[in-house]
Image 1: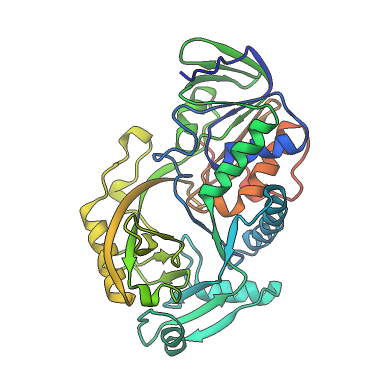
Image 2: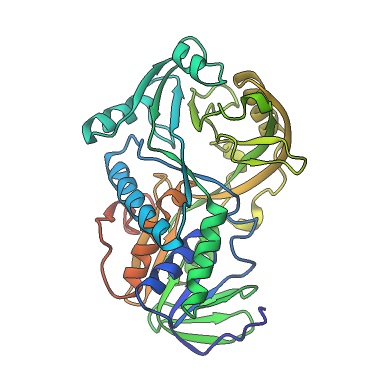
Length: 395
């Protein structure tokens, strides 16, 4: 239990100290709501959660026109967030979608689908051939690869954003209590019970504990259908002479055998302990045999075969990659339609889950929407695509 003493009453109780919970707390602070308690069972944005790490992508390059419009709204709110923070929370350097073009949507969309949506919504991009990609970046695309480059995309400095939200919430007088597990929620009365039996009565409860939300909500028959996917990413040191040329990228390839074909990477945004420039890269699929329903069942050790596939892709497809220097498993809460759940479950209970590894780019919109629900207001945009009542997530 935290050294902070939990109160017996609060206007809003937030369960979960990751991206969704902290962005909600910061948004509540800016709405003038100060009687807020955030409860985190471990530590804020801890390494076993989905919000851990230094970078996430932001973009508007989506195959789904609804997500594209929501991403545009999120980017508008990111600009406001940076004003509140008094400095940049993102790095704008563009994003390259490249690889095989086929009319089948992956969990990240597709190149043809993204091109159609960006044409329809007037989002600027460059269409690139394999030769143009190779000439511009230290990448080695196959001859039949094509690409789309969105110049207004980039990286969210997620570690800096988390620090900004924590400062904002604490400055407003919010209690952010770590090592404080919640074992029960009363969806009607609006109370939460801690593992020591202490109860907090709340005007509103926000459940934002990601892969742990199903366990908390199952006794209420309110748990959405979720799978937990252990997703692999790593840092690699790179040739310093190429350090300023690496793009932010996502590579689309068809599944072949046990290779799911979807990989992503960032430019050099940090350095190893010895000063070498490094890039972050990862795999954007999980083999079915590793997908689980309970957090305790998820592997924490990077699977050897996935590490081999990531290494092979990086060393074969990028120039100047030297050494893998850190390997991490992050949990993705995945709905069947790979979309979020953000909705009011009862008059006193709201939920965000199903972040699917994409939620951080929508963070200001998620936080603002949860704060509005906790203030008995409606989200500023239509979020019906994230309803907890849609077929893909109904238990």
